[in-house]
Length: 309
Image 1 (spheres, rainbow, N blue to C red):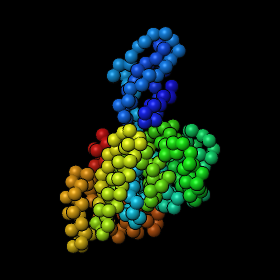
Image 2 (cartoon, rainbow, N blue to C red):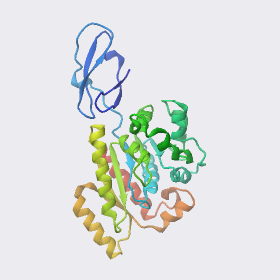
Image 3 (tube, rainbow, N blue to C red):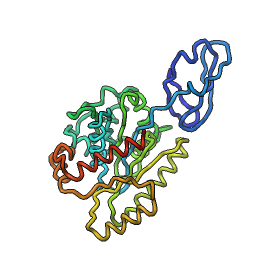
Image 4 (cartoon, rainbow, N blue to C red):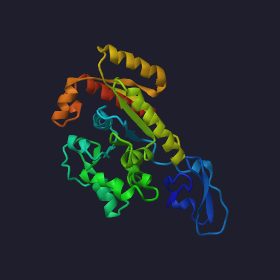
């Protein structure tokens, strides 16, 4: 039985046996702590015990987001996903950017069916739209140019910001991690991605205005937390770091001083091998597994696994 919290709209798959023969049971939403009744068809008042409360499936849904472009969002999404898959985790990557860079980077054509096509089909189950990539344990929900129509056709509809979250509910239990690549702008796609996630990774190089980009995402996260009624954890990931640059070292220190434990320990260095791997549409590990960026993304995957354990 699918039930929905009447406060934050989180959906749960409730074991039918828990309510069989009872008029209702009382449950607590693990997302916003709201208590509400689930009605059955019989005649006794039985309260659901705390140990029977179902848990939502969103623990390991991660959005890679920064409103600033060129900060390695797509590279992080793909290489983190590949590294987690190499650890034996089953990973779904969601390309939620109209540019479809993640789709292209994984070798798929830009006319592959996207989330827009899912909404147009009216289906709640997105399984048939998910592609198995050439890499073990790694799957993709592609993007295409029609994603640009989402804002015009759906943003005026009630609860439009939950469209991705509700569709991912049909497959969330099948994956250890769902990682969403977002566009460099706050709009329909980014808002839906954040609403669907419990963790946000903010990639940022140590450049001028980097702090501004992080603060902008922080402000959006606060809005999302109020709207969704749940806490969202975020971490800053330093990317394309040049330790030889004086400016980069100064900004790196400033970021770590301001955000402290919100900054991931892993740092992704500026690496020529990473740029080359993008040209040939390969994850950096499969292009140059001894490169610094390949090792660092594997380290990032281990750090993320610990944070989300």
